[in-house]
Length: 196
Image (tube, rainbow, N blue to C red):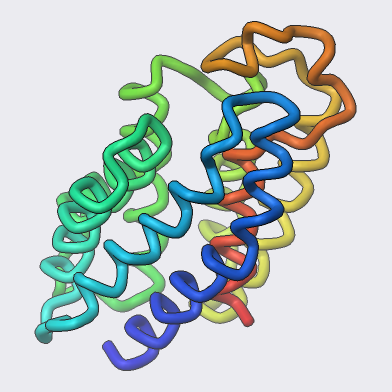
């Protein structure tokens, strides 16, 4: 549990550290508020960590609840939904790697369903999908986080060639080409922060 809490503290710090990058990307192909949302997500994470308890499942569910309250925007809701789905999918009796794998898969499926999107449509799923698959084939949690971060980074790079179909970025269409998807970038930086 201590390692998980430490990773979540790194996640909150990483979201704040990269908020200007998220704002810049979102300003180029969106409404420019993603850095602010990332900061609010970090607040939600810290609120959940103020009383982490001794159940990973309950902590993950609390993360989803606190994030949804702190960051009620579209992106914040999707990010929170991932935690809520992961919390429902895992068992405290399983080892950390099984929890990570099943949690990521559940998050991927829930966010796709809730966002009515799929990989290849220039969304956060283009980072989360590759990250979940990389984690699924890793031998342990540290390797899974490193692999997930690398795969998510490759997913972000791939979004530069995609035409957006959702959100405000969908309005600018082809003009978004060459710009990394901001939501996918948040997912990449999230895994990168937790794996450091």
